[in-house]
Image (tube, rainbow, N blue to C red):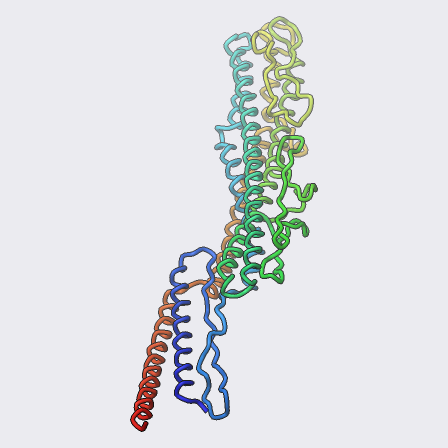
Amino acid sequence: MADLFGSLTSAARALQAQQVGLDVVGQNIANVNTAGYARRQVNLASVAPSDRLSAGGGVDVVSIRAARDEFLERRLRLERPAEGRESALADTLSVVEAAIGTSGSSIDGSLTAFFNSWSDLSQDPTSSTMRQAVIIQAQSLSTAFNEMAGRFDDARRQADDGIQGAVDDINQLVQRIAALNDSIARAGGTGSMSASLQDEQIEAVKKLSEFVDVDILANKTGGVDVSFANGRPLVIGINAYAIEVASNAEGMATPLSGGTDVTSEISGGRLAGLLDARDVAIPKYLEKLDAMAFTLAQQVNAQHAAGYDMNGTAGGNLFVPAGRETGAALALAVDSTLASNPRLVAAASSTSAGDNGNARQLATLRDARLFAGGSGTFNDAWADLTYIVGQDSATAVAEQKSRQETVTQIEALRDAVSGVSLDEEAMMMMKFQRAYEANARYFAAIDSAIVTLLNLVGTSL
């Protein structure tokens, strides 16, 4: 049977429980803007009665836990790497797209000016001014190819720098997660003592998943084990396994795990997007640019060699011959001997003075069907390259937007569970405040009853 002193203890316990509730509300409000914070919930349970004539022992605090939905957290870990990959790819390709330039003011404009100079020379094949104009336009075209190849290479180098930076960020996060695993284990694993550490841990895993696709497995100490690239370890317990970087034949970064090249195994996150841009997308564009430069040098040199210069001598090479297609755009240059002597420009198709046949043949190369299986001209090949770059960039931007919207929607669902709502916390604060006030009045009533009883006992004695 309950007595007055038991009721006083029950009231004191209830006051303490409502105080804890107010403390939890205050903690939630204080961290409304803290990244990664999951709102805390206090779990109360009634204290069982000591005998059949007792109403119960009041209320007690069972636990304080962080409100999280593991399913939503896992969905976010799956979606963020895809968003990070498309974001990195879109950022890199936007640089390449800008390097292409506008229609008519890039390589297409230089091609047009070059072939037009041959057409102009055919009107006056003995003019030294027109011959010099051909050399100038050839040099301008070579420079245009050189600079475009250089821009593509710069974009690759920037992506490579981004890869190195991403690996450094990943390794820092891996070290942080391993340290948090240790701190969580020391704090007792799960529970209110480690809740703040788990908030930091989840935030670190979130940032890590933006850089690379990861698999997460909770361990028995409250920490997480992290792996990537087909199960290769990043964090096991309190041990961190850094991604190493080696230089390939081009001097570019190659990510290693345990000494093994894992480039082909990385499929998500910013690291995957940068690798794709550096190793797939930009080399594809450069390959097409090299094919244009190689074909240009071959075709112009062949036709130029078929003509005669002002000395009546068979024409030589206008461009320095390209030994192979790879690197042709960066190496394209006008033959130095011809560049210093306009008389060596082979405008004639015979040794007759004033013949313009070869100049006219060289001018017609503008419309020669040399690409796309014999259906495309030089300008068509350039248009095809600019279209591919623009299409790839637009696709990456669209994919990024789509992935971002998916992540935003899942985050909204997650925040509905874990986020702090000031309106809800205000309601909970009033709830605990009223309960505290009511329990305080009950405590005062029991205290008054005890005082009365003690006075009665004292009087009777």
